[in-house]
Length: 189
Image (cartoon, rainbow, N blue to C red; front, side, top):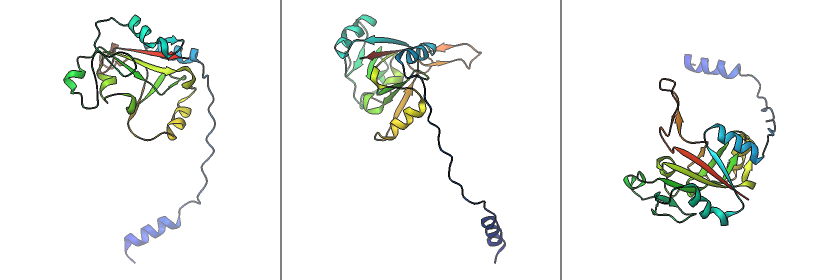
């Protein structure tokens, strides 16, 4: 028997007995829209409550200037966007209004699947981002969020919480450093 085989045999012989994994505790949390709003506002975003999707177009028109270049499949858009839209065209967008799948109350983030993005770069290249989320779609914790994702088809997606920001350069907070300068969640009943 070679030295290598003797060493591997000794390692195999000295392995501890297998143990089952401990149970994962159930993490409960505050699932309220108030908690979601407080956490999103703490990260620089804002929440606007809608009585229903019928008020979406009027609310967006009231929140953002009429001359904005808008990409959306939820409200009237001024710029059509598909997955093949060139980056140069996306860079001219002022506002993207997209459908978020659900929100997480513990940190104010929203899950945005690729199917709702129109283009992968759109949520990070638009100057302002508005995400439409059902109030009944809130979960309390990230544990619950990942459990919810486990039942969905795979693919690209992103959790967004507040506008883009960084404070790593000279300890100075910069909003919109590498993404949207503002994030509004339009929470509808």
